[in-house]
Length: 200
Image (cartoon, rainbow, N blue to C red; front, side, top):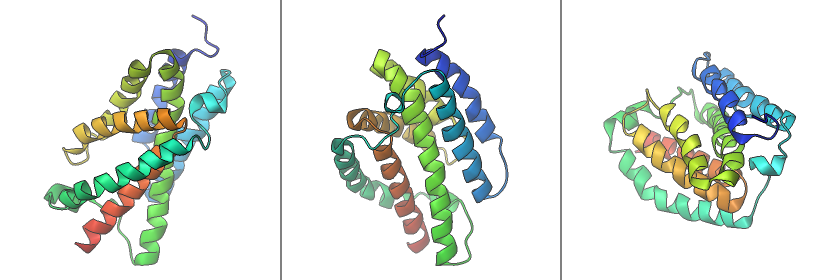
């Protein structure tokens, strides 16, 4: 099997990065650092060493279409977020951090933003794009299964929800030719939900 520019080889040797993040410990800022290192920097360097270009990995600004759809989806998820605050397990779990005031809250939401940037870069960028060029739906499922599995341990509803979201995010990013639209949708949706959990 030819290793250089082989998307399946990249996929298989990238999977251990998931375990490196899963079993990292420390506070939210250290966790954000681990995510950035193992979900973005290391996989990107690996992919580039294998001969993949940045645009082949969904790393870039992409098309305006992706951002327009991200905005539409964000608006559509507002009622879902409001409903989520009525589920006790969700309201007890989020936000996932303790905070001492609004300044601390904002700082930790920025750390969550770095975590979600790294997640989207890994799942919807570095893993998805090379595989989807060979077979779109196989690529979507290949990134979505591990993405859903990393949500085990969170409130039960999150595993099936993240599986569906992973498909939507993947389609959004492939259309927009960048992982950035799903990052913005994911992070801003998360910030909104945290605020609703705090304020309602």
